Image 1: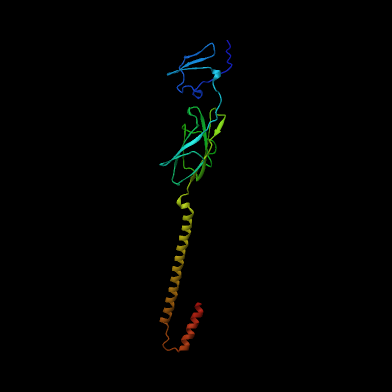
Image 2: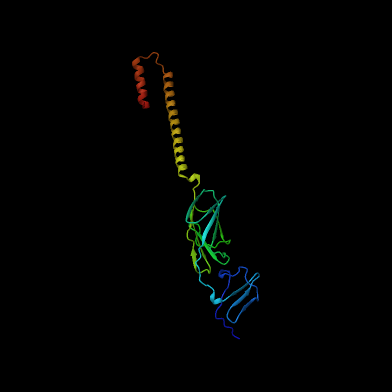
Amino acid sequence: MILSIKRLLFFEEGLGFSHAGFRMRSSHKSKTGEMFWGSDKEAHLFFPDQLNYTTVPLRPAVNTLLAGDNIFHFTGEYAIKFPYNTTTFVFNFSSGELTGDKKNQFLYQLLGFDNGWKKPVSIGQVVCSQLPLATILYFKGSRDGSNWYEARYPVEIIIAKPWWQQIWFRLLYVFLTAAVLLVIYRYYKKKKNTREINKTIEYFANSSYEHSSVEDILWDISRNCISTGI
């Protein structure tokens, strides 16, 4: 016996049916084509040809961001700046469908952090840590894995540089270094001048000018000044 299947249809919650599913062996098709399907709480009566199979585009979006003790809600395109010591970021997202995201597929990418699109580990949530100084989260969803719909707006994350990489700290470091070098230079210059003065005083103290004339004393001083370069 050869069984020929002309068309295979799926009836699920996206078409208005119960998300609880249907009971086994609880379906019936009348002569007019009307279907009777039973679930745990109710019965569904419908004509398959009258169902609306129009595919509505998904509207995926990042709804909230939890960073540390702060939570941010998104209704548009945002750029948020965080301190450098913020280590964990939790993004919550959805497809925009009221029926839920159980069968939808999602991909995300952090620009400058991920090499390509990645699949979230948890449904409706992406957890990231140690982000670069500047990154943008892109997000998209799909019903079948072939037709993808990107989020209407990305989320830009800016991480502040640590204090030792800030411009003000570098300028302060240069200023303090220059001040220390200046103090050291003045200290050694003053020490050198003091040594020269002590040397001169010692020379005159040890010189015997008792029996010398004024002219001899002046000539001796002149010779010493010339030899020492004073």
